[in-house]
Length: 80
Image (cartoon, rainbow, N blue to C red):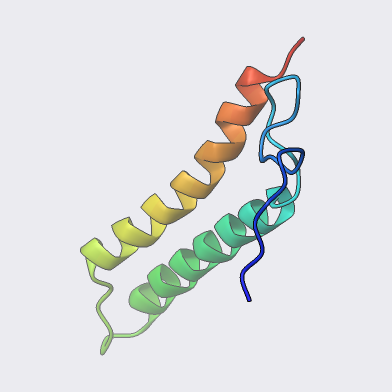
């Protein structure tokens, strides 16, 4: 069964800032993706049989940047 969300259960607080429900998950996900890129590049540097594909490395870094971009935008929009 699917339940609807109430009007009070919004993703944006009254002051315009996003709620921090998924903040730790986004930052943790970005750190994990960056760790994967570091591991792939290190394996590429050490191993002669493995070649890191630039498209995959760039895609993973882009996903990490998107996750962190949400936090940066939220930080900029915070009321002073």
